[in-house]
Amino acid sequence: MRTTYRRHKRKLKSEINVVPYIDVMLVLLIIFMVTTPMMNLGVDIQLPQTNAKSLQDKKDPIVVSVDEAGQIYLTANGAKREPVSEDEFRKKITAFHDANPELQVLVAGDQRVGYGKVYSILPILQEAGVSKIGLMSQPQSAQNGKP
Image (cartoon, rainbow, N blue to C red; front, top):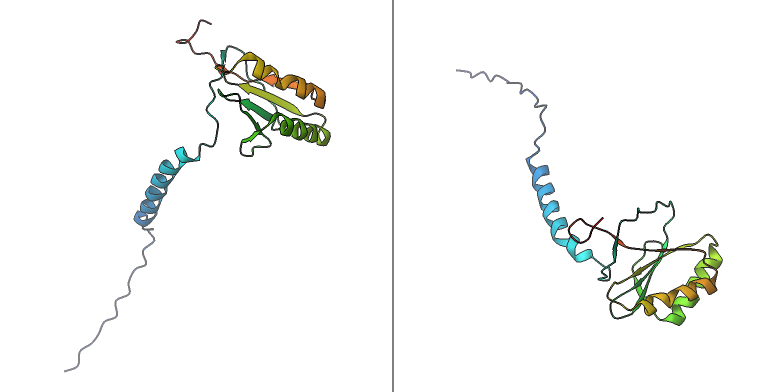
């Protein structure tokens, strides 16, 4: 007796199994949710609040920050904030201005620091020849102040 084997042709599945992809995406989501708060490299500064509209500029400005202790920080071209002394700040801002005469500088002073410390930055910027200087602030909320 001879057995005949029938060859069954299997039909190709045209479906994609997405379960492994969903697993990978959920793991990546959790990783990013955990690591994102750790990437906050900024200095804790409480900016004053105002109703002024924000400025739109295509180029990244230089940001000079003064924290509550009076330490000066310099942020250039999206790089990490670095603490600088007044002499280092004077040298770096002069070099930046020499490289780009249309340099825009934003000053972010903590509202808890003395006015004199924030003001001491302005003559250094003026000596370097910087003409585009702006002050940073937080938008005023309806709860904290009157419009």
